[in-house]
Amino acid sequence: QVQLQESGPGLVKPSQTLSLTCTVSGGSISSGGYYWSWIRQHPGKGLEWIGYIFYSGDTYYNPSLKSRLTISVDTSKNQFSLKLTSVTAADTAVYYCTRGGTYFFDYWGQGALVTVSS
Amino acid sequence: QSALTQPASVSGSPGQSITISCTGTSSDVGSYNLVSWYQQHPGKAPKLMIYEVHKRPSGVSDRFSGSKSDNTASLTISGLQAEDEADYYCCSYAGSNTLVFGGGTKLTVL
Image: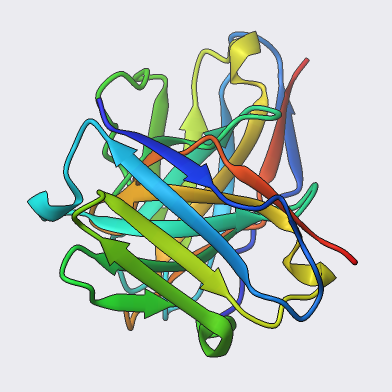
């Protein structure tokens, strides 16, 4: 059974960089056939796709976040990561990491609340 | 890339059937059979219920079914049960390796 777990600071100051890591267990990121995504949910709001990465390192980003976003993968640690720069209060959200198939998300982490505040 | 349109809320009584719509455009829902649906209970992570318009993952009840017509996808839940009360989100491939979600629908079981 694949499991994903987000980790990282729960509080980030405005204008700084939000960094989260997703650790995958029960399956290898390197096995291929899947893509690894980040999705966020603003408090009381809907879901927003952030971007995804293949084990090869190929990345695809939400155009609205692309200029501030980097998603990377560390296959040796079976982890992938999210970095979002120049954050504002609008980036306060629960961030989920997921495994994806053909443009769907079949395994989700429990989510990590990140609050942007001074 | 605009969010897909879902009704804010739907409701039904136990045993009834309900349908949640998800309206996009010819650039997303209308162009690809790559619509998925997610169920989210309060405080929990979303759960995949339907993928590729109508396919059900292993373990998902056959009371859940999906379909698509033109730019609108639909999720139907038959034999409504109290445990089905949750938020439901649709998601579609939107071309150029991007995806877009709907705004979500709150299902109330009366």
